[in-house]
Image (cartoon, one colour):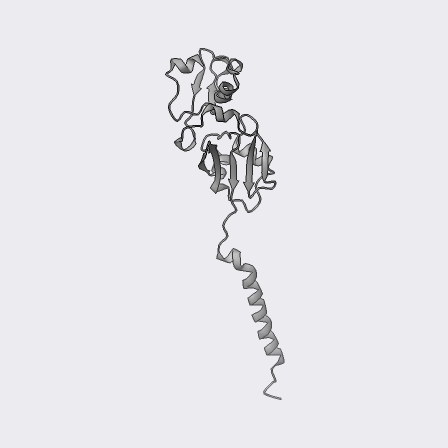
Length: 197
C-alpha cells in the first residue's frame, strides 16, 4: 500500500480490485492479479503479496471508465457471478479470485451451438448503477485480444443467441410449402384424364 501512496495513489478510474503485479528478476514475466480493494475492505492488507525491487505494478482503469464502487459496498457483495444466455448451464457460479470470462463460460458448461460469442456482454454492478462491456469472445479466445478480463463479484456474463437470417428462420415453412405444391402438381398430373382416351 505504501508504494501506491508514494506514487500519488490511483486515478479516479483506477480499479483496485484487479491490480496486476508483474514480477521481475528470477520470476520475470510472472503476473499476479491482486484484489487490493477487498483486502482494504476486509482489513487484510498485510496478507497482500510482498513487492520486490524489480516488480512492476499495473492498476487498470475500471471497465468503461466508470469509477469503481466505494470499498464499503465491495465487502457486502454476494460471492457469485452469473453466466446467462446461450450457455449449456445458465445461472449463478461461485465467485473465485482471478476468474476470467472464458473460465466462467467453461464453468457454465460452455456455449451452445447457437451462441453468438462475438456479442458477449459483461454487466458489472457499481452500487446502484451497472456498466456494460462488450466482448468479442471469438477474438479473445483465438488471439487474447482484448487483455484477459477478470470478473468481479455479482458480474453478469450474457452470451446472446446468434441471429438467424430469413432463410434459417423460415426454412421449415418454405420446405413445407414447396413440398405441398410439388405434391399437388404430381397428383394433378397423375389424376387428370388423358385427352387421347
